[in-house]
Amino acid sequence: MTMLVCRLWKAEEGEDIAEYAVMLAVILVIVIGTVRLIGTNTNNAFSSVASTMQ
Image (cartoon, rainbow, N blue to C red; front, side, top):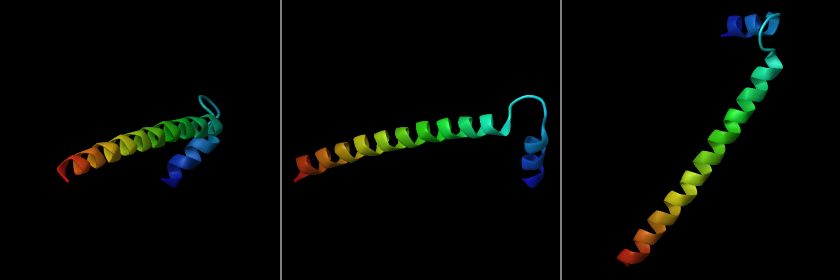
């Protein structure tokens, strides 16, 4: 793993390490937003089912 980071850090051509960091940040924001949205919708669905059963 450290070899990969070292190669990416020293690479002169292609994307820079800052561009990889930006891509990672964008992906993380999308994943976290999706998980929060799914979690909220799932919680609402389970609450609705629980209310109906009582």
